[in-house]
Every structure is written in C-alpha cells, then in structure tokens.
Length: 305
Image 1 (cartoon, rainbow, N blue to C red):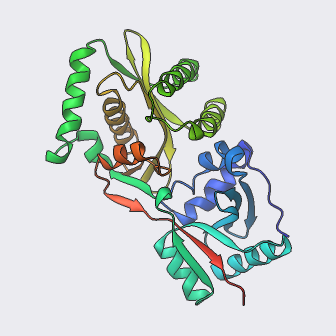
Image 2: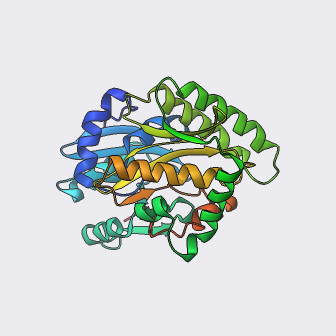
C-alpha cells in the first residue's frame, strides 16, 4: 500500500518540482489548492520517482488524480491500481483531461470507462483580454468599471500584505453575511468549505508563496483576490470577493489583478479562474467573460477484468 500523507507547507518545494515537470493548466495540480482544500477533499500525497501521486475523497468517493510528473506513466497507474485493490476499492481517476484520457487508453485499452465532469471544468482567459477588456464582447464589463469609478472616486488598488490580510478576512466575513441575505445568489453548501480554504490560505500566505490585491473605497476594503502561479504560462486565481452591491467592484478587482499579474509575471499567458462547481450564477459570471480555453475534466473508472 502506498504511504500517502496529508500535505503540509513543508511539502511545497518537492511537490512544486514534480508539478513543474507535468506543466498542467488544471487548477487541481497546484500545491495551494491541495493544501488549503485538504479538509474538504482529504487530499493525501506521495512520491513515486518523478511522479506526484494524489489520493482524495471527492463527490464520487475515494479517488486518485492522474499522476503528475515524468517517467513511466503506465507503471504509476498500475501502482495506483494495486493501492486501490489493497484498500478494497475500485480504481477511480478524477480530473483527467482529454490528453490524459488518450494516454490512459493507449496503455490500458478498453479498461477504463470515462465520464465528463462539466461542473469541474476550469475557465482560462487570455491575460491581455482581462487586463485590457478590449472588444465588443467585453463592452458591458467596461461600462461596469466606468460606473464603479464614477460612484467611488476614492478607490485605490494595492497589493495584499501580511498586514492587510486581517482586513481581507473581515471583509470576507461581511461578504458572507450579506450574501446569505440575497436569496439564490450564493449556495450555502459551498461556503463552509471555501471559508476553511480561504482561512488556511491566509494563515499560510507567505509559506505558500501567494500573491493578491485589494481595492479600498474611503480606506475600507471592498474587494480582494488571491492567487499564485500554476504552470509555465498559467496563473491560478484562487479566491475573489467583492461587495455585489457596488456596481463594477468584481470587474474592477478582476481587471486590476490581471494587470498586476501581467506586469509582475510577463511569462503568463492565461489566468485560470477555476471551475463553477455547477452553481448557475457562478457559471453565468464566468461565461460572461468568454473564456479562451476550458480545461475539460473527466472521471475514469477501471472496469473489472
């Protein structure tokens, strides 16, 4: 049986090394997400040569992610097959992209049944489009920002620092309170896990190498966002909060952070704004920016011989 362990901040260096070998754009292959969401999904990690092995418990039960790294992928999958068998479980691989499914079929023809997980698809956007908001499709976003500037002439953007993290946490608590008062805008079932993840990210902000920005109006934090680098050309936006009653606040923090990332990470081509969890309002919001790419994800279950 593989000796999986729950991730700690001390694991970041070796995990990042293996993730860099895989160079994947899906937000699941990011150490911050593996660490801050571990209470929700029970993430556990192990190393096998130059592969990162990940075990978790998701919506469909105990599962594994497709090995990330480099080397003999068939051997790595067989190791997961043996581990699952020792635990008396079927081998279930989650978050597979189409190229990974093709590779799996190449080495294990006809042995896996795959189904799409549309709620888990990641939304990727060209960073220049989000930073500049050019073109007819994003005209409405530009209008929202104009209204925000007109209504909030004192607005200011700044980088998040350890000193301003408590203010962001206070803003999140107030956002949560206001959101629950607006029926249908937020699904309460998702807020508990996200709240735990956000607090873990803030508690280990520097250890995780996180970066973020906030917007103030009359000195008060009204929006903030947090992210970190995901792959060679993709940056992951983990959290984004803004007061919904401030027209354009979401559009503004989105644009300002895209501009900050572009300036500080010129190699980045895409912003991964993660999935919509199947929440209709969240899906509508992400689609309103017209994603340039979707990271498709599927579940593969090993069939009995």
